Length: 423
Ligand code: ADP
Image (cartoon, rainbow, N blue to C red; front, side, top):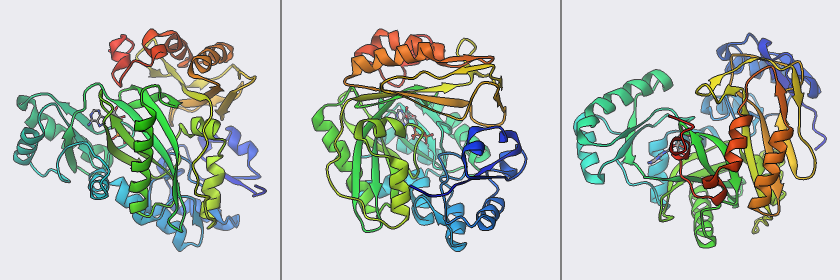
């Protein structure tokens, strides 16, 4: 786009690729995220010193931080993402659910907002029926959730959930919803501009998860019908429109065995798995985010989608040892290539993975005419991806590409437990 870039980095990330690729790079502090990537004054200071017009927050750290978005606005720096009000509204999951319900988007049956005490929890659970799920309103990253199967387990779990939410998110508020059995996680990518236009770019199926954390994502979903797809897209657009959503966002749904779908939450940022959508729609989502932030209008039209795309998250984890983190020096890093293969990564041979941050070290995305070919291409690419010196999830993904249930598209979020990969 011809825009000059400034990268910020912590001392631990001085050797990461974004530092080399940016036109300018500035160190914002030591490894601890609190003192670097979460340190708002330092980031704003760098933006001011380097004369940056806008900040793209990526998908971690401050990407869904309303205070950061507000401070950017106050400092006359464009935050590439929604307003602080919008981030707050959607960041509180219980509130977001109520908002969507009012706009007639189907939501998982559950409590109306926050549950304040055990008695209320008992009553709500009785009404919606067991099993239920207690969720932290401030939860994220698959954390702050507890399944309760019977009334005898409720009190204990309610107290634990509240305590955990408080220590993990600094906010003990929880809400309750029906636990959907054998569910699939399917989400819709949306884009909205400041003129009230909202479009969707189809779905992503993120059902392959370990402890509620996504590992494989794909589009189109092998599970839903065109009719359901259409209805989900329309619901996502309706929900986003009703809140005047601006920027790129994701409306997450949980889908039951009978293909009923329910709103779960909205992420007010670009997501890790966005490349699969880009591959089939030919829309560069980051570019769209920047254009929207620049006040441009999105063209409202039905987005064309072609082919099938799958993403495998390559993590520095040992799949043979309960996915334990495996930081350290990458001695060999050979990226697969060829037709329909895309790798997004900050790593290279000789790079030392710091122990401080997320374990994801690369995203391998393949695209082909149909799902069968995409799976074959993914296997070939995984085989060609050589990473030495550390353990990675590549062997896990290779196994998945040969797994019958996966190939058939016959699985739910509990698939890894079912095939014994996760105990
Ligand atoms: P987070 O913000 O932590 O990612 P989500 O609300 O998106 O939390 O839920 C993460 C995952 O947890 C979902 O993809 C799904 O696998 C599971 N989950 C969430 N709510 C329910 C529910 N009501 N019933 C069954 N599984 C659920």
